[in-house]
Length: 65
Image (tube, rainbow, N blue to C red; front, side, top):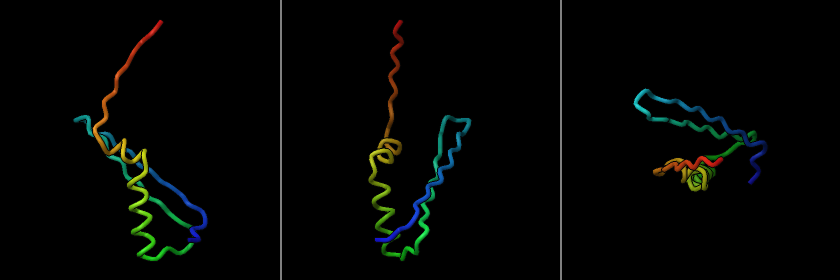
């Protein structure tokens, strides 16, 4: 597939209740038909970073010194 230049735009919004929302827009400089667009969205949603951020995240902190 010829996708040309690929651009990502991510917007992060934090709510007072501790909820964080992320909005992602992926753009291609070449024309992408509906079938390609659907497949590329599926691939983007399977990326390791997407899977980590959309799952339950637990943060453990260790301070050394």
